[in-house]
Image (cartoon, rainbow, N blue to C red):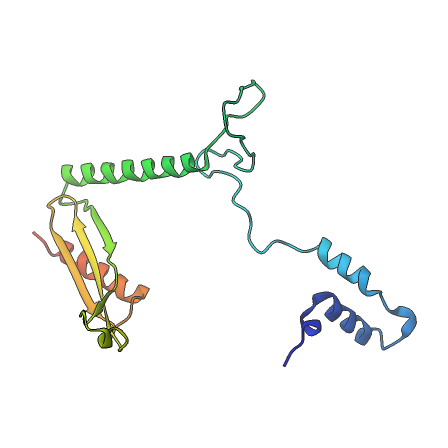
Length: 183
């Protein structure tokens, strides 16, 4: 069993230093110096998302509620949701452009929409005993052709396979093979 002192990085560094210095007392570094050095060199585990990737505007600037006077040297205040909205709009525009280009030339360009549906747990019943028993999960991947409005539903259960990338890529590959063999 490990204790909290064994997991403390500064105490661990002190033990390593003592072992490396051949146990001489005059060469020991105080624990407080090691703690300070570790805290100064500590890197954050994740980088903060402080810049909107679309508008390249710093999102760290807090905007107080209410009206704000705009001066020429101040950047325009940005709502973090506005960044997400502009990304959504650009994705919708790309989808519309892809649909239009595939309608103009359907023999060369295909446009489809993929949707991995919610996992369906079977059996369904109002009986409370079945609720606590083992259920079978059924998965459903829907592919909708935006040009001819055909829809394919790939349905499988967890006995056959799981919901991993291999199964989904197999469904997409089957769809692409089917598109390739069409006339």
